[in-house]
Each structure stands twice: as C-alpha cells, then as structure tokens.
Amino acid sequence: MSDVIVLEDVTKRYGNEEVVKNASMHVKEGEIYGFLGPNGAGKTTMMKLILNLAKPDCGNIRVFGEPVLPDSYTYLRYVGNLIETPCFYEKLSAGRNLRLHCEYMGIYEDGRIEQALEQVGLQGCEKKIVGKFSLGMKQRLGIARALLAKPKLLLLDEPINGLDPVGIRQTRDLLVHLKEACGTTILISSHIISEIEQLADTVGVINKGRMLKEMPMEEIRREAVQYLEVHVNDVRKAAIALEERYGRLNYKIISDSGLRIYQDLPFDEISRLLVQAGVAILNMGSKNDTLEDYFFGMLGEDGE
Image 1 (cartoon, rainbow, N blue to C red):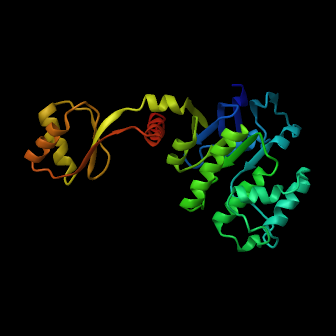
Image 2: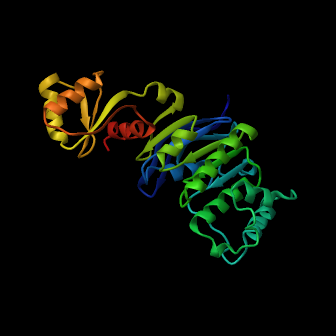
Image 3: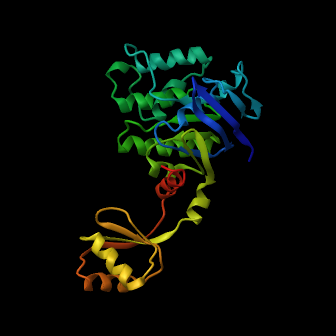
C-alpha cells in the first residue's frame, strides 16, 4: 500500500516554542491510523500541518503523493476533517449549516445532506436549530460535515468527545464501514485509548512534539507481555511475601491493591503463598499488555 500522508522531519514553531520537533509520520492508503499523545503533545498541530492550516518551519509534507506547499489547497477537496471543537451557525438549522458547507465546497449531489446525517445517527434532525444541540449532537454534526464530500482521507481530532456510549459505538462502526466499504484512509486521535485499540491498523505516539514511534497494531499485540494480575487487601504485605519466596521477582505494584507478576508462576502456588502470609486475595487472573500499557510505557521511556 502506498502512503497517503507523509511527514518528513517536520518542525513547527509558535514564537520561540517548538510544538512539533523534527517529526515524521507515514499513513498508508486504506488504513485507520490511531494517533496518541498527552494533551499538548502536538497532535492537533500535526493535523493542521497536514491540512495546510499551519505552515511548517522546516521539513516536507506530502498528501496523495504531492508536496504540500503554502499555496496547495486543491487536494483538500478529497479530505474531510474534524479539528478541535466544531463551529456552526448556532441560529441556523443543521441542514442549513451543511448546505452552506456544500455550497462552499461545490457539492451538489441530491440527498447528500440527508445521507451524511443518517450516517452519524442524526436522521430527522435536519430542521433542528444547532444552538439547541447537545455537545454530543454537535460532535456528530461535525463528523457529518466532514463526510459530505465523500472524502478519500478523513482527519478526526478527538471525534468521540461528548458522545454517549451509543454514539461512540455508532462512530466506531461508521469508521470501520468507511474503511472497508469505501477504502477511506482515516487518521484519528482520541484520549480513549481502548477505542483506538479496537479501530487502528497502525498506532503513532507523539510526546512533547516528537514522534516516539509508529507501529502496526498487530505487532503491538504480538509483542504484548503476558502477566498475572493480583488484587489483594494488603499489597505491600503481598510484595514482601513474594520477595521472600522468590527473591528477585519481576513484578510491579500498580495500585493500592494490585500488582502484576511478569514471571510464569502457577496460580495455585501464588494463591497458597499469599493465603499462608495472611493476605486476602480479592481477584487474580492472567492478562496481556494493552495499548494503554504500550502507550504509557512509551511515555515512561520518554521521561514522563
């Protein structure tokens, strides 16, 4: 598959602050790329650079194989986006807002507005005033607006902000449908890491303006470490008992009641040891590292 988005050694400064630092990114055609990073890490700025809403101070950007130059805007006809909080004319209806966008973009396909509203679960809301919409409804309307041109590339910055569980599920199903049925390439950021884990083919992690890593989700799953997670009434007492029995044990305390053991030890042996030490086991089970573990592990290596 060819790369739809390529950033090479891109830096962006606002005043004296480097918000993107020598960053590179590769998004393949037809994939969902999950973009992770703490607040202020540079995710939104990277998306604005791709959309030519911000100009890089150095480095190269290509979209659909063509360089993005200061006056490059033709490619945006094939790109839908939802960046930050979507803005609308609050006193106009949802349909009128989308109609204005269609006129601006030169979209004259009959039924397109109704179809976009239905795709995001807002069927029947065309005549409703946007100012009366909830945050979640405005977010859905923002996604509908991004879909009007049937884009080949979709950039979504925190698209499930404000959505209820039903809205999150509908959005997830929609993105999978766009990828599988339409071949749409999707770059999505979200602070809900479990959603990215379910959706993404590739994951990129950014921190303090620097891209730390890009990795296929399948590779992350293959490299996931299996461990035994134990929750007890006294985690320090449990840790002492384990160290006395096994010496230098590879484990980590994860909370006031939980620890993870990264060595292959029998369940019944651990259970018996803790009970004999007077530790009550609340629950115990075998687990694998998740994308959240991978993400926080990357931040830990980066000094967070």
